[in-house]
Every structure is written in structure tokens, then in C-alpha cells.
Length: 155
Image (cartoon, rainbow, N blue to C red; front, side, top):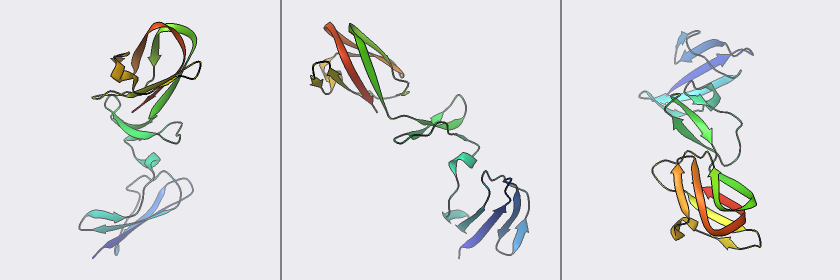
């Protein structure tokens, strides 16, 4: 049988009451947003309910945008939101496009598509050997002649 845990907090996000079945414990947890949270627990496992990510101590969310996802940052020991793609605009024609995308891509290669000025679209640029992966946050695209346009990098 599932027990109901009821957490009630005031407008300052202070815990007023935690009820588990018939017993009560006060001021023993922190909740980030004012309101009431109901969670069902069965055999020590949360079966229903929700908690805001911003209220978790190991999550650091900043400038949240559509299409982002959570990745673990071992340097801060926290989960952080991160973009899943990057659009690079190469205004000045160059033989080498040096792109810092900050996607922190580890253990696999990102997908790279380019659109050159003049409308030429090239998919899977990495398959042609034009891409040099410098670091998890940076790559270079090499051309035989100077080009300008856009590069689309995605996970």
C-alpha cells in the first residue's frame, strides 16, 4: 500500500509540515517554491509526484531555452543545462573556419552541416574529411579556397 507524503511550505519557502501517514516531522527539508507537494511512496520508492529541478541541490539551471538538456559537470558536481546545437556565421571568407561551439561533446563526433554563401548546402561534412575536432568545445572546417557561410553543429 502506498503512503502519502504531504509537504506544506509558506510563501518564504520554509517547510511548515511534512506528513507521512499519521506521523509528522517539521523543518527537516528545504523546498524552493511556496506551495504544497504531494508524493506517493510505495516500499520506499517514489511512485508519483514531482519536484522542481531548481529545488535540487545538485542541479544548476541558467538561461533555460527550448531544446536544451541536462549534462553532468564533474568540476562542479552538478547537473547543468546545455544547448544541443550551435549555428556559426562565417562572415569573412576563409580557408579555415575555427569554430568554438561550447557543446562539450565527449566520446563521439558531432554532426556538421554547412551552407555556403550562394546557397550550396553540404550535409555530413565530417564524412568528407573537412572537419578537424580540436576539443570537446571546438572544431575547424578546412576548405581548398576561401568560403563564407554558416556551419550548423549538433549533438
